[in-house]
Image (tube, rainbow, N blue to C red; front, side):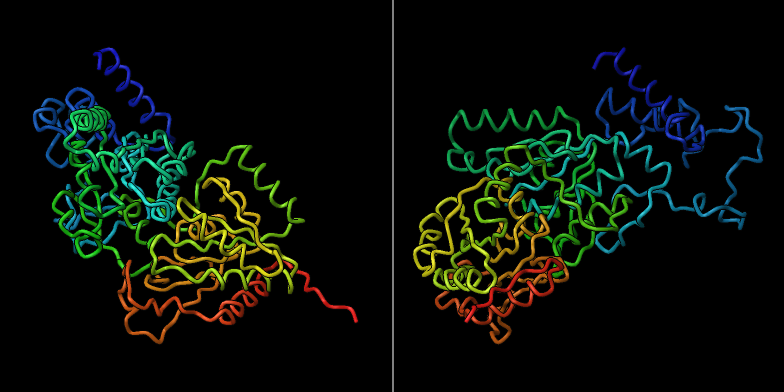
Amino acid sequence: MEPAQILKSCASRLCRLMCGNGSALEPAQILKSCASRLCRLMCGSGSALPKTVEFFLGLRPDGLLKIEALGRSPQHKKPDVRKGGATSAHQAAEPRKNCISESAEPRKNCISEMDKVELSFMRILVVKLGAIGDVVHTLPALAALRRALPDARIAWVVERGGAAKLLQGNPSLDELIELDLRGWRQSLMNLETQTAIRKAMAGLRNARFDLSLDFQGLMKSAMVARLARIPRRIGFARDALREPASALLLTERVKADDCDHVIRKNLKLVEHLGCDVSGEYEFPIALSDDDERFAAEQLARFDGSVAILNPGGGWPTKLWGADGFAAIADRLLEAYGIRSVVTYGPGEEALAQSVVNQSRSGAAVALDSTLKQFFALAARARLFIGGDTGPMHIAAAARAPIVALFGPTSSRRNGPFAAHDAVIERFDLDCRADCYRRACSHTSCMKIPVETVWQGIVKRLEIEQRELPVLSVER
């Protein structure tokens, strides 16, 4: 960076701190913050202010400017808490540590003035590489981060593919960085692949991110932040990581309940920065006019009333029978006049068509859509029925009424979060506890009677505030 650019950046920061943000900051805080930024711009030293710079500026080790240097009277001097001097809650706050242990509690939902100075202009990298459901569950954390730090530069690194398409054009992001990790793994020894990896990592390093938030908890996600040479790498405590060894690559580890809903778990990392995470979950997803038009056309095609059936599951152990979905489609049309669209992902076309073929009344049709088109349609749908998959999580983000079918995974951790949504699962199987198997010899957990699912649908539609007409047969 050119010296003129460095000087202009620091001058702009100084003006904003002194008179632009409406907060009363101590001159010492202003000077130290600008000096810290100067060091980051010149040598990429992170948020730490070198001792030589502190000495040059006349700063004491506790971060307060010498009173004589500013000509301030001694009455403004901070009382010595150890001697019992009177002080405010803000003045008595403990100095901020560079690293937090696994046993430390998350910080409170408030950002001090100095925290605002440090964080407002930081470059933050969100690390969540995939999959679709994981990315959706991280969006409320991104929204909370952006609300608290509107001026920060926030980037998201994600694996190229479906999840990345869901993030494109996101209003809460300044940059979306896509990595072809799957392609790299397939040809790791190829010279072109190695060149692409070096180029991608160099781009991350040149961005000079100040901190990273690793929501993934894997070695590959922690390695991305480490290779990017990010000085402050925040992730979950060891017992909440999917791959505990990745904790070695973190500088700060935040305690979180791995059995709690994954959205609340992800919010713990943002709360650790002092951001307010209260309120209703927000899912920032940018929709185009074409996406909205697609949804409107589908509604018009089915007289404004449509249910979404998603028989796919990613894992074979998550699948409910195609005949069950077909029976549900017939009963929805007969009892409520609701027609069904059967959605599918890559490689699931035959499964979707099987549902359509087994529907006796022709109540279901297969529907191909992009993830954003699906989101737009789910926001208008009368009902969503499906298992623990990306489409179910997108439907939950769109606030569609949901009846979710759970087998080998935990509904408490991954299920829909709306209070009125229904979860159908079996509690009479000991093997379901901490199962998460992708292969099983019997898949008893997904052998759920159609009548049980139908009762959940009736209950969910009754709870729904919109009144649905029940068709009666005239005699």
